[in-house]
Image 1 (spheres, one colour):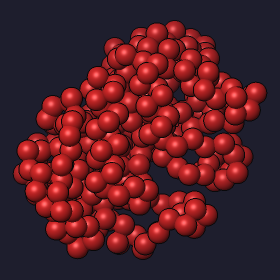
Image 2 (cartoon, rainbow, N blue to C red; image 1 turned 180 degrees about the horizontal axis):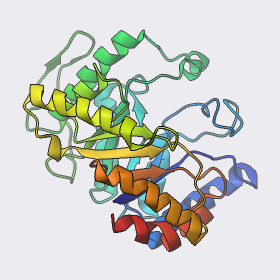
Image 3 (cartoon, rainbow, N blue to C red; image 1 turned 90 degrees about the vertical axis):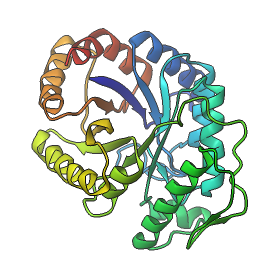
Length: 297
C-alpha cells in the first residue's frame, strides 16, 4: 500500500516566517521517509471544525505551495487534495497543473471535486452556484482538462464554458497526462464521474465505520464502470484517513497497519494521513514505523 501525507495545518510555531522553512523540511522528510504522495488542501480559508483555528487560521494557496514543494523534492507525487471546481477557470487549472508537472519532472496529479466550503467563496467574492450546477461545472472541467492534455487544441463548447482554443504548451511531461483523482463518495454523480473520466478516487475512511463502508462505495463505483465500459481495475483506489494517527511509536504504527490490512483486502492501494501538529516529526515517524509496515500490504 502506498502512503501519502496530506498537509492541513499552516499555523506553525514562529508564525508566517516559519512556514517556508518548515514546508521545505516537509519535502525533504517525505523523500527520506519513502512517501509516495504529498498533498495540500485547496482552500482560501482554513476549514471549520478541524480544530486548527477555523477560518481565520493560516492557509496557503495550494498550487503555489506545490510549486515550492516541487523545488524541494525529487520523487514524491504532488497534488491538491482536492481542488474545488469553483476555484479556477478550467483552462487556467489545466495550465496550472501542467506547469507543476513540467517543473516537477512529471510528478503532478490533478485532484478535483465539486467544492463545498461556502464561507470562503462568500468571503472572497467567488461565485458559489448550487450543488447541481457545480457538478455540471465539474464534468465540463474534466472534459476541458482532458482536451487540453490531448492533441486536440480546437474549441470547446459547453453549457457553462466556451473556449476558442485549448492550447496547452508545453504539454505535461506525464504521459498520456497527469493522473486525475476525483474526491468524494456521492454514489449517483461523483462515482459516475470517476468511472467516466478519472484515474483515481479518494474516499473518506474512519475507524468507526471500517472497510465495509468503503467497500460499499467501491461496489457502486464498479457498477458505474460497467455502465461506462471502464476497467475498474485501472482506477487507483485511495482513502483519506479521517482520524488522528500517532506514527512516532512502533505500537501505534502496528495498530494502524493492522487497520489498513482490512482496506488493502478490499482493493485500497493508497492511504493519505494528516499531521495536525509538527508535520516534519510526523513524517519522520511514518518513515521509521509506518511506511515499512504499510508497504508490505
